[in-house]
Image (cartoon, rainbow, N blue to C red):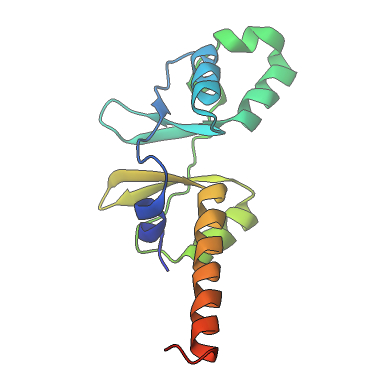
Length: 145
């Protein structure tokens, strides 16, 4: 299966994002309100400037203390963001996320941001896929094909 399948089944297709000049305090409020672990930092044209995660904020807090809340997203965000395409395989995305030790990935189609997936989305999709495979085999073995 492909990333496009994850996007079709994902709860909520809205991409929660911030601007590079937003404060960390603003991002913390977004993360808490939406119960998510990261947001993309988007340029005015919709391009991906970076990603800021809970981990980035914790590192900033360890370095700068509470004053980090007044810093800008651009001060803490990861600028080199690895993305994927809708036609990338789910297994390849799982491998890239595991090897890169990151949990969120923008989905880019023909240069345009079309989605944002997390490792949770990937695992949920893979579990549903495995459950369907097991059920299909059960029907086949029982002679109900």
